[in-house]
Image (cartoon, rainbow over all chains, first blue to last red; front, top):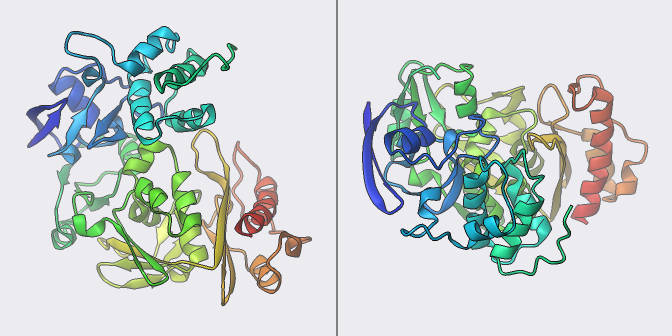
Length: 161
Length: 260
């Protein structure tokens, strides 16, 4: 076991991990931050997406030790301390951007990265950026709509399907 | 995953030493290797992560050559832009999360027959720089998942000459986002190079007939009537060998048109 130290959601944390301990495992099991979901565990579905040093990564496809010294942000950092949802989360609620909710933490973290890189994305840019996040309920339509709304754009032209 | 030790050296010298131990393997961004470990298809005793080594990261331009550190992630290559066709290619690998972790050195060392970077390296006439030597791309790609790298040899940088014109066109396998077939075309003062990925069971290859035709006339029309044989092409549920051979012709034309 090796000691790993990182900043998660603004708080310095450490723990003892094996070489093979995934960042997703460390966050969920050592830190109890179970908002990060593990869907496929093969690096394809994106439910485990979180931010490492400001960049979105699939935390099931990275070892905890590789985040030693890093700044990590999980879905738990998105809402305010009193539970008030942030703009993206609120837009997902307003536009029904989720059904079962399993993929939602990854979708929200990915949307946050997208809007940081590209504050006013087109519908196509959103769909392309979500290529690494799989949702099996919504058909993506309302997720795309929610992200457009979160970026302050008019979504009345995005027709319901 | 089987248990292993994970080492995270911060200098190239320490990484080279760590890789001398029995059953040690280098870990780039891990976007292929970690899923492979989960399937227990690899059983290293030690993994040596290369992503904490600053001297292996970053991109700089020297004259008309782009020098990309081996541990530079795809997102950084995509954002750099001084070799537009290469940045295009990097920006189409996997998805945003994969591009934030996966590295050029990792991709070239793995030499997946459907990966994108091998096409760019071979078409550009790149030089693969390691801790031991410099290897011309023409000598580097040996076969399926096989390269000229020795045990423990680390790709420290890739030197990419920036050509007069170039383009990459990928016919994406939409589930994996690897190339079902991808063609990278490069035009220089010395002629044209065409590298094809995703198609051959032997991995990336140069299509020499197309290169000759395009060197005398750099236009899609110059490829009329040229075909690659379907023998030795990959056949799977996504496409037959004949389909892939057909795509090589179509995508090469599109790449030439795109390169202008």
